[in-house]
Length: 345
Ligand code: KG4
Image (cartoon, rainbow, N blue to C red):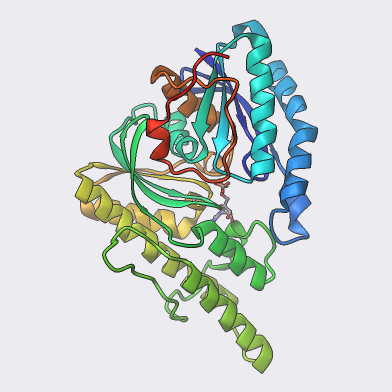
């Protein structure tokens, strides 16, 4: 089964062709990062307008590069939530039109489910059940993936996402946008114990996380140094910051996998590209006897193929949307388990 998949929830526009949920025929991704960099973050209207400009061209290129004919496309999958609403609407409208024009089903895909499914593209043997640490620019979740389309959120951030925290840290340090990779690079060789950043714990909710205190702590430290002329060691600061983020994420993910009785731990999302978090996950998973899957770097950030991968399993579960499918800025990952889809176009 060949699925044309569409992603436009934030600042990447992507159109991919994926066979049977596991084989990427092509993945055309246009990153808008340069358009937003001067503002230090994503500007929603610029994002929407850029998606409109490039999405048709990406679809044309996907067909041209793969050599797949329109008549070979069996379904269209689209990331309909969560995300910047104007941005999501562009991909959704395009996908609806494509499904109607091709006369094929429209498959709704929750963006974070897509991030998790990126792992299916890299690891043919990977199958649920497993626990997934999903860490992206807008979401931070620990999820028990009981089946391909049956998920239970075990924990989530109460405030900022881990990626937002990286981006804010990069911003106050003048490292540019998006901030995760520059912070990761700046941390190399730094002393991760030099600065004592907070790791929040939430009473009675062992798998929930909070990053707003950490973010404020970094901002205050930098501003205080600027105002008093104090010296900050950037490598040490970034290394200490990464330690705090990793200590918030990794032990919780491992403990959640144990509690759920899973043998496999999976990471997903843009922040899963972080070298410190990857290294800590490896150590912690090995110590706990868990098999770990971390996506290759190219599949950590937003892409179209991950939507086609998850779309295949949503299709097998009968999740076919009607022409009334709407976009949602926020939508719980497990709410998507119970959605009754109005099949047919
Ligand atoms: O998954 P993604 O591409 O977009 C969303 O679905 O939100 O994640 C983007 C986030 C950004 O916050 C970016 O700074 C972060 O992933 N990121 C990283 C790294 N590379 C990207 N964070 C930490 N370390 C990295 N190496």
